[in-house]
Length: 458
Picture 1 (cartoon, one colour):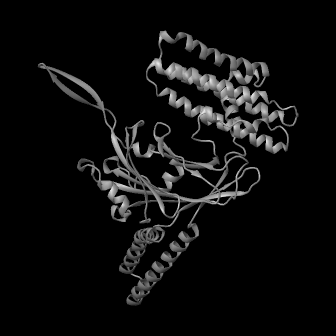
Picture 2: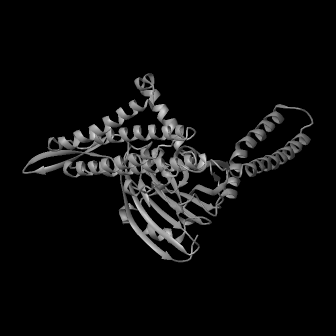
Picture 3: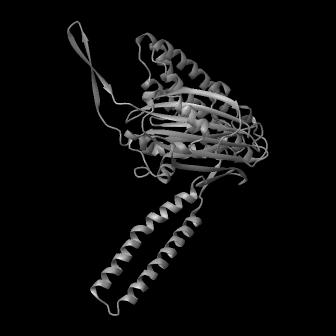
């Protein structure tokens, strides 16, 4: 369920059915040597800058052979229906191609890489043919088709050029490499024949890239749900701050009046006492407010997302987010038992961070032919790597009285326990070990997995 995304990020992609609820909890064990704590990384900063969540009609976790194409042929019907079906098809192709490109780049040997790349190329050709086979005749629908076709052709070309640039090279597969390059050239020529982009746009790398980003957002219209964010407890925080200020001010005024009654005249001593009183008020007001506030909001959700269909504006789902630093004693017993199964040398002093997401689907049904929504939650570990030490160490070997040395990099490990609850009774527990350095995640390894029907111990 938890898998790597970019260099320093991972994603979780659960599926949602109509009228369902699901809860996801993540418990991070962060070694103290990584210097991550409430003072260096606040919950609000992590949420705003390093967490993303979006919902789309089921289009993730698919590969090119599984892309649905039957909706593209429905040229009849409402204009908005055609646009939504066309966008859904192109969105699926884009995500599936991205996933398959990543999988193909995992092949380190040329004899595995090039056959996989050729197979991927043939599948992509077939999907592009299906799209272009149903070119609409209605002039009102044609702009939607051209935008989608233009972007998909460009994205396919860029994806395969990236594949060839980052993949292994071998003279034994010169024919296959040439075939892939010809495919890229053919897509480039196709866009020129269709006059999709002006010459001035093509000559400026920034202009063509920005145009394609715009087209990408256009094909997400109606597929990716619109999200609005609300910061919960904002009014409650103001009330707490105001109440604490009022109580402290009442106490200060009481002390001031008592001091004034003891001094019939304004003296240096009175001024000094009043200065000390007001100084203490400023010192303790913020600390008292912070302590009371953290006690009140502990265990309460901090943010709420609302997801709406970008076309009909119907409310589809809502999501509540919890994020807070905690202690090992406050973690549920089942999760503590999983953490306790680590080897003794891995039980180092750590900071504990708890993330929770509770999603409720309000819609009774989705787009025709689609029974689920795909939720994507992305977590960036960039702030976790900010304070990691740079540089490499050296490992020495003694071989036949000769000393050799080998460069080794500094690596750190995060332990994460994922708790996924689909219903009131069914709970999935998984523990992952995330190995990372300052620049990227080296490996994500699932250490423990258990699916039990047991009572939630939260």
